[in-house]
Length: 353
Image (cartoon, rainbow, N blue to C red; front, top):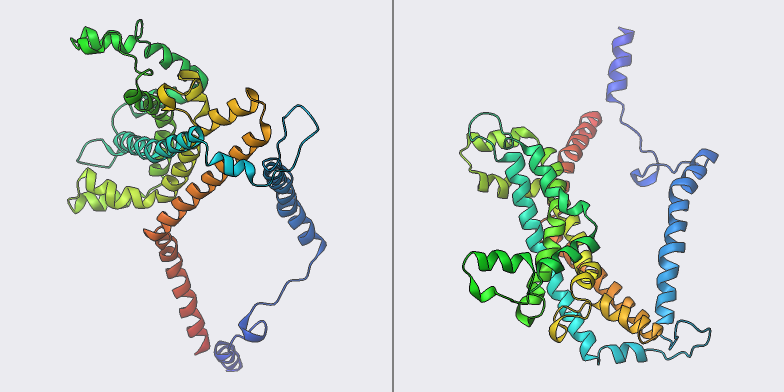
């Protein structure tokens, strides 16, 4: 009887809040906690400040000077470099070019990479367990191979393939009866130079992101695909309704990295068209910065260009996060957390009765 009373009293006893307002009490700062924060928060933060924030602040400062690069003498000119920059037709052309690269290269690359990843992982038989195509490992290796080759080598190889007189591309096209491509200068024509450069960048990067998406798709529970197949969903519908929402975070990260690579694109473009292409149609900000700094020795002006390029990159990343948020990117996590919070609330109500 005494045990029953004790048990009922314990069950009916309400849990007391840890602190006023229901907030948990603050833990005391012990030596272990302090050393943990210093090791795993303080050291990375210090490294970030020293090697990222301070150099960026120095770049802003040097961008406001007329520093020549090889002399300790300089004059503070304020925002004159930035004003001059946005009155420079060549720089504005380079800015338009990198905006074009950032608009098309990530979109096309990720679309192709996602198609390859879905075909390899989910493109098997339409009956039975969901599995990829036969020989998936071989296709992964083949698709990843261009990324293994250094970017400078890729650019030089394709520069030879685009050669108007002895290039393999013109030879194949003329061999197929397309005589209009005889001695056609792919990198020498304003209409074809930028698409040719975009093709090389996409060709060099699509394999890496295909392997990245394959790994992400492998983490999607197979029961979702089995249920979709039972409901009669086709491969395209399954990709849109299941695969893309499940790997949304991977796609967002890949889009940001690809956008940064496209905004730079120095190595590929410099290897194929070091002079900026016809009428500066392929000139990038990095190329313009390089020429201004090392050919004209205007390091202060070039540093200002670097600051603008960094700002454009940050704006691009912010836009990607904003679009992902506006299209429901944060709903999945909140939905996953909702059952846990409901369970906690139910437990709390049960304990309060």
